[in-house]
Image 1 (tube, chains in turn green, brown):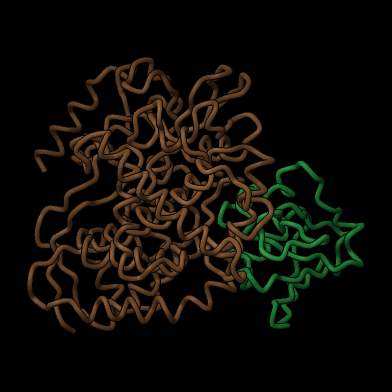
Image 2: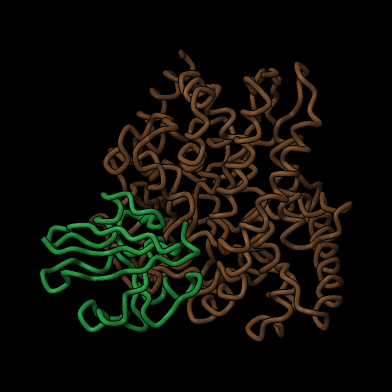
Amino acid sequence: MPKVTYIEHNGTEHVVAVDSGTTCRDAAIDNDIPGIDGDCGGVCACATCHVYVDPAWLDKTGRTVAGEMEAELLQFAEDFRENSRLACQIKVTEDLDGLVLRIPAGQH
Amino acid sequence: MSVNQAITEDVSKIPLEEMDLSNPLLYQNDTIGEYFRRMRAEAPVSYCAKSPHGPYWSVTKFNDIMRIETDHKTFSSDAARGGIALGGIGVPTEASAMGGLEMFIAMDPPKHDEQRKVVSPMVAPHNLEALEPIIRERAAAILDSLPIGEEIDWVDRVSIELTTMTLATLFDFPWEERRKLTRWSDMVTATPGNGVDSWEQWQEEMTECGMYFKGLWDQRVGGEQKHDLISMLAGSPATSNMPFPEFLGNLILLIVGGNDTTRSSISGGVLALNENPAEYVKLMNDPSLIPGMVSEIIRWQTPIASMMRTAVCDAEVGGKTIREGEKVVMWYLSGNRDSEVIERADEFLIDRKNPRQHLSFGFGIHRCVGNRIAELQLRIIWEEIVKRFSKVEVVGKPVRSLSHIIHGFTKMPVKLHAR
């Protein structure tokens, strides 16, 4: 099962085994990762599962596309960066085994 | 219970096409729930051909509302097309506060995006951390000033007081005059006979509001950059050259957004706990339930009952075709009772599993910009309430707002019991 590492803004790491096909948002909720609320239920509508993808993984996860919903929501998120993504829009695959996601300080 | 049964029978006999969910009396007498229940079951997306506000579509189920919220390219908020509130908010159509004044909630991208980005840092989490001790101190002072065992109006003494203080803090508004903010917020939703005597008076008071803020703006526009909302709007290139109606519109948006809404949730929570005594016991036994309870209160109250969009092209929602130019009302208050999405949706449960899953803040690019500060105020007031009182007892019938948009209370008589 692929493993995903979530790093809280204070440095605390959580390594979670995730079924392929599950989104990083759902995996975070299922494992009570602090800082990922996912209020909308994982349908790209609230930006409360904002994460920074470790730059080494960006090519595999992909980036946001300007004009699409994910990018439109993220532009309002606090401390939006080039490697910002919504965890609900990243589906875990075998290719993403070892993925590292950081959680913004501003997301409680 | 016979009254409720009578209402239920009546509602079931009304022809569906004659159901007008925008009738404000249904909210004032609190019978709207039965109407929504029937709409969700029989006609979740339905067309109301005749209403005082003209024809409109009603969308009553959670997922259909979400579909509209997340498709702002099809469903416009632009004031020029009709804005965000069916019938405007209280104001005559030709001068509608949600149409005549310009505010970013009633804009589409890209202008919406530029203006929202100016305001959102103010209510971002790191700013809220700084605000928490101030809000807590004020909440404590409000509660400590209340008499035990005497009938008082919770709406005025607590709900309005706390939200107005917070708003005055956000605006760095002259402290002694802060109730002006409450008055102007109420004015936006007032109609002759309902909060104001005439449209002339309305116009006069809104002009006063505009001039007052113009004064604050002029003081701050050239001054050192401070972190209040007026300075932020005055200091940012995206907003510093706003025409006056746009400036006033955005300020009013922030006043109403920060005032009526949280006020209604502070009152609504007291009522919900009184109507569900077992939940009140849970709360007193375990105050660590408060953060989840706050979300549940916001779902249960749904302080903004509805918002509107206008279709810019033909679109399908819930199997119905909505034509270009038609108005679509999203009934959040109904979607928040949709048991297909929310388990035991008709029950107020302070320890429910996914309390944050509700429509009260909206979704998509117009999602409530102040949602965290709303939650913060509610959390603090409840933490301070349980420290002081064994019960905030509702001792008379609360008076509800006459509005299909602002879902709140104008009076709630309570008696406080000491711990």
